[in-house]
Image (spheres, rainbow over the protein chains, first blue to last red):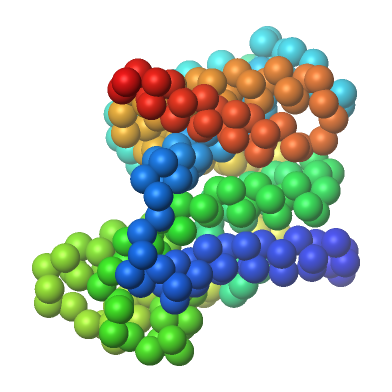
Length: 107
Length: 183
């Protein structure tokens, strides 16, 4: 029972994740990308992760409004520190979930 | 999904965007932007694969991930590596990926919604992925700008286009500052 749009999303995602891997291998074997483009592309992942994360932490609802007193934001601080210290993806997810669970049951 | 989309963070992003009712196009655009880094990885691997056939390259491209790139790039740099070995690395990783996805998909139904702070799993993962990206002050600055712009845009324009917009604005601004500062 999968919605038709979800199928399109998956197919589209498959295409846009495969093509950037395939294209340079086949066509750019010798040539190199211009330096500014390399540097720009290099900044994109940190930008996009932050753009995904921050609105989730400090806003809420539709239409969105600022919400600073939500557990999402306060749990993020110790989770952030843990991630910084350990660099462990699995550990961070477990700590984040545990703290969020705790915060929800307290509030 | 795991067969077609060999990209973990994008899958999580897609799930969280789908659950907030984002449109197909903005999800695909976000996926594209998040995975643009593979363009860089494939470009640097291409240097070592000049003599491989197009068929092998097409097969190889499917398995280019952060992890397999790290392994293959290191080995290729050491000159003791072959295209076939690199292919084995990529597709072993891929197989493990698909098998774990299936296990996760079937066991996931036993976890009821909202249990054990599962709602926060994505947020925590984004936090750690972001930390792993922040290799210097330049990346921190990019993240700060992107986050601030994203918050402002998410409050003012409906939908999820703020993600791609904020990222492009932040990366362009920081690159501009860097070029301007270097002069």
